[in-house]
Length: 81
Image 1: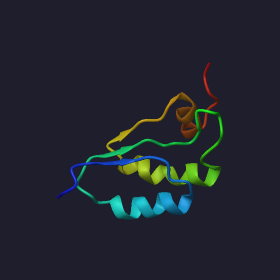
Image 2: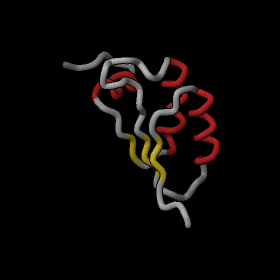
Image 3: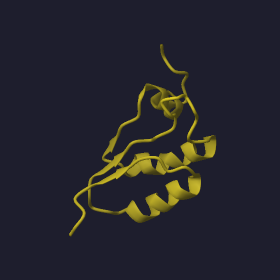
Image 4: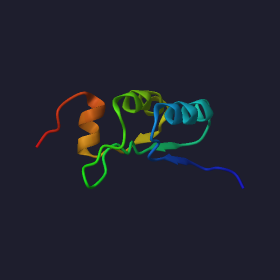
């Protein structure tokens, strides 16, 4: 069984983000990155260092699917209301 695509969700640490990027860089498959950073309850799930590590994954991803709050954090801007 081959791999047709990869979806990345919650990673939890910069080390995990870099490990996933190490494996997927150069892969010839579509990569969907859903940067899980904030829980529905509002709890923060990714610290500043983890968010910084997401940069590598965003560069290799075919599609990135943040919600509005995550988009603001990734773009360095305050959330728009």
